[in-house]
Length: 127
Image (cartoon, rainbow, N blue to C red; front, side, top):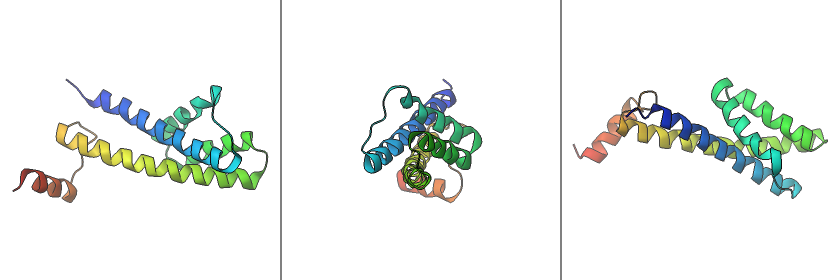
């Protein structure tokens, strides 16, 4: 069975979850609001943007979201930075998790190569 499709879906899900968590933390901490309704699709848009276009464009999407939510530029920038930091922590954790799983399940494109792979093999295989 080809696990690459499963890993791609899992990657989008984990990135969306990280983006949701980042937006939720930022919105609740700085404006005492909640994400609800159509706004629940914003984390999916951020995750897809991050995967396809990179981190800068994903930050601009987040900033645009907060500009439309709040009218103050400085508050929007502060909320965007906080949300983006939380999102990046989740994205890094997702990448490490998928890399470790992909290495041991031999999923192309999700494998860790180099010294970390050798270190993990030595630790797990006791060689």
